[in-house]
Length: 255
Length: 272
Ligand SMILES: Nc1ncnc2c1ncn2[C@@H]1O[C@H](COP(=O)(O)OP(=O)(O)OP(=O)(O)O)[C@@H](O)[C@H]1O
Ligand SMILES: [Mg+2]
Image 1: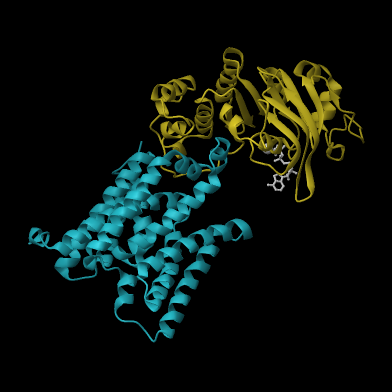
Image 2 (image 1 turned 120 degrees about the vertical axis):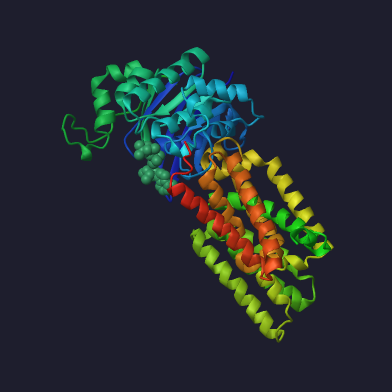
């Protein structure tokens, strides 16, 4: 079985300004990959390339062995929850109808019901999506992403603006999908503690790849964590815990 | 008295094509409204008026010419938006005025037309021929079939383009399809309410329905019901009071919008 994600020598620029440079890493089946990096590091850009949304890149991105630039068929194995969902607040569509959109091969109502129960949104089934709270909406979009039984789930900062109980529920669901259903997950977050708690592997980005490897290796190295994630841009360093002028050499343990 | 009128052929044709157009405009208009394309219908209608003038000038059946011009301008608006980063409302404003400008120039060159031109401006549902009725039925049938076949794709790309793309839908193609169908719908609907009131048919029943319905299915059904009833009542009213049908149809639908706004603000309809 080909690997869910293989990125090699990926470079992306917007109007000549590089957003990602020469990024390479691979993700194995069943991994729970946390992607970290400061604002503007290129996390969303990386996801956009994996999802075929951004094709203006050099290098290759393979999803389940297929070049996403050439073939869109691997998209059918992906469930995606974007960083922000832009939709009309008064769009007349119920929770159930939104989840149905996720089923590309005919609607099976039993499956829709099942997913809604798993995510504790079955009581919201007939409510309009725009009337729900941010956290409830987020769960609906996750339901839509998993209703098709994807093999790879991509979540871009999925917990922004969600309260603690909903977040814990959400983390429980992700853990369950990953360990009991074998779904490979790639997600980004600014919350290092949860990345540490949830992820098996970590990618640390800031335009270039700074670290890729086991989460344990990353988080056990206090200095690495500090340099990578707290003061990636030394000029913005305020607590002066680190005094690096140059980013340290790339450590790429897994691939 | 009301029922005697139904025995007239012209009235049967008017009601049949009127209700068919009502259904079509509700459905197509719903997608336009949700895509923030509410004035799109207006722009296409005005530019297709240029096509009507051209058709009259060249001695071609004006509606055929209007179909051609409306499809061209529908695609053009979308192109301009995509390629030149012009905002939607600006692109629409350009189209709207150029259609009328072209029509005025042609009318001037032709030294004016007969009364014909007014029937396109204000509609002429009581004058539709059997040929027109068949055209309306065929056009509506084919457009609704296409929408039904591609329902999920169209709804998904209307709801959220990005997620629709990720689920493998060719969103750009769907967008063009929607404006293409909107172009056809506009010209089909010109006979009912005329160039000037098209967007009323696209927008008002849908805005009303969005206040009353919750899900997409229920909202579109409500919109169709509102649209059909205002068209039927409007046509009957116009006949018995001898007023222009376009005016009474649109006024009736505005009344329904007002009524549901009032009902809503007094809490008569609580959606939850
Ligand atoms: N559509 C765009 N046009 C131009 N530049 C862009 C565009 N999208 C992103 N960028 C730039 O690319 C860089 C990476 O952005 P990206 O959104 O991928 O970062 P991110 O890591 O997801 O940030 P955040 O944590 O804020 O979500 C940024 O410098 C951003 O300004
Ligand atoms: Mg981002």
